[in-house]
Image 1: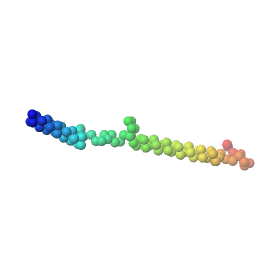
Image 2: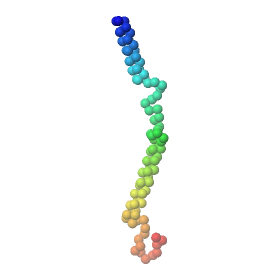
Image 3: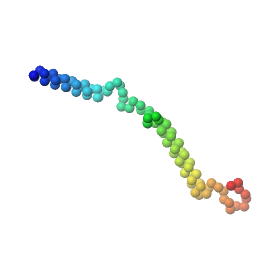
Image 4: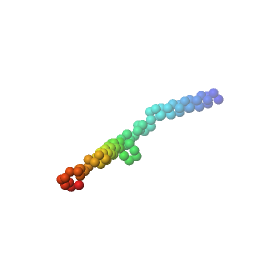
Length: 86
């Protein structure tokens, strides 16, 4: 009985050691992030950054257009006597 317990104990210790070793070292050589260049499922980080830059640029241009319309800079004044194309 004592030998059997010793063998079971040794088997448990070896299997725990094997599990710990594979957990620490890893199986198959995979890193923590096997696809570091992909930000989402189908778009890379660079494409996300480009899309955000285009969106910011569009928003800034729209804001400038709204500013000029608000302050009436988009059309010349109609108070002068010379004709204007607007």
